[in-house]
Length: 221
Ligand SMILES: [Fe+2]
Image (cartoon, rainbow, N blue to C red; front, side):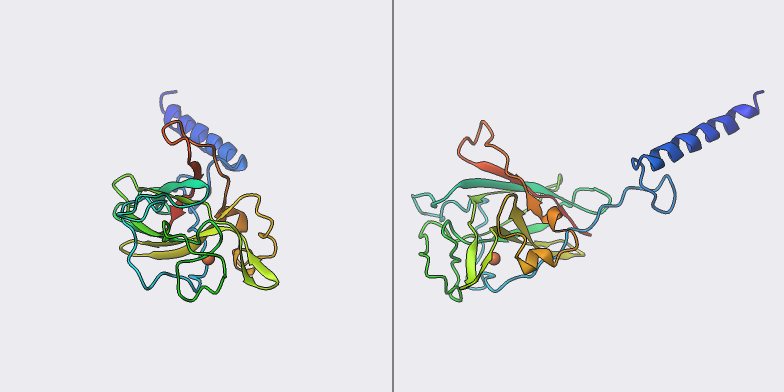
């Protein structure tokens, strides 16, 4: 009887694993006991307004120009998330850059021909480095959709360029409920557009004026 026990135990584990696999709870990667593998965040184009003319704000707060006294116009927004590798491990030391249009859809870039005005209190270009837990956070504003031709409008989005030691990811984060998602060739070029769209959450008690967008980044690190 004693010799049956280990075999019985293994059978029980295999049966349980088969049930988990059937339920989609335990992903099958090589073997039933392999580590979970996350999909790399989908790439999007860099776009024409990468701010080559200036250095990113490294304070983590894009709602104020360093040295300025007034806040940027627009809906205040915290953009935060984790940078992780495909096994879910935090990526420390990743450089996370964002750039975006201001509250009326204008980039602080000389090539942007949108006649909407610039906001002197918003440059829309920031960078932070992830700590040991892989977290990043920016204070910024929610950009609106903006026209790119007389008949085409891009949905609201924030550009990301994430650099690690082995990988670099360029992508864009979009906002749920935007009417221009379906007609946007760039978003629709992604195999799974929904994975690039975030739902805004209500403000946190400690930051009552800021809506919150969470966007995790998966890349090789
Ligand atoms: Fe853009």
